[in-house]
Length: 288
Image (cartoon, rainbow, N blue to C red; front, side):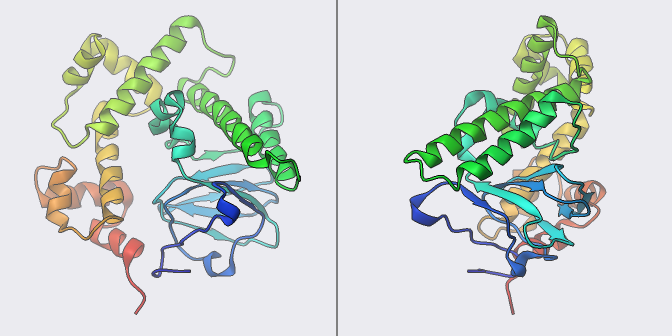
C-alpha cells in the first residue's frame, strides 16, 4: 500500500523480520521512494542504476549497495530478477553495540564495487547469496540462520568500511585498530549530539586525547574535517525530522544545531544540491 507519492510501506509475511526478494515492484522502478527499513541491493547484472539522496551509482554484477531507513532512492534499467533484495528493520543490526558504534561510518560507504581479488569483498557477496539459497529452505530455523548470516555480512562490511577509511587493505596493527575504535566512538558521539554547539576541542576532551591528535586521526579516518562531518550529521538529522510529524522549517533548523534559518537553507543546499523545502517535498508530498 502506497501511503503517499514517495512512501513505500513494506510488509513482512508470516511474522518475519527479514524480506528476501529478486523483484522490485513496478510502482517503485524508476521512481523516487523511501521506507523506514534498511535495504541491501546486490546487483545480479551489469547496468543497474541506483540513486540514493540524489547520488547516482551505476552497478556491475555483484556490486552491492545499502539503502538506510528514510533515504530517498530509486532504481532504473532493471529487468526481472536483476537484484537480490534484502530488507529488514535497522534495529536488527544496531542491537549489536559493535555495529551501532560504527554505523555513522557504514552509512558513509553505501556502495561497494565487486573485486574478485579481494577476499573480504568476495565473502560479502557469497554471504548474501547464501541468504538467497537459505530462504528457499524448509529448515525449521530458516530466519534464525538468515539473521546469523545478516550479522556475518555486516561484520564483513564493517571491516571493509574501516579498511576503506584507513586505506589499509592489508589489515590493522593493534595501534590502528585502537585508533579506529576511538574514531568510531567519536563519530557516534557527534551523531548523537550534533544539535549541540560542538567543537573539536570538546570532542577531543570527551575522548581524552589532544586536539591536534584527534584532528589528525579524525581526518584520516573519515576523510572529512571535523566541521564538515558535523554539518553532514546535522543535515542527516534534518532529513530524519522531515519524515516525522510536520514541523516548521525554522524549528527543524534550530533543532539540528543551526544558528538561523538562512544558515540552514544555505548549508543544506550546498551539501545536497537542493533546498531543504524542495527536498522535504520530494519525500513527503502527498498524492493529489
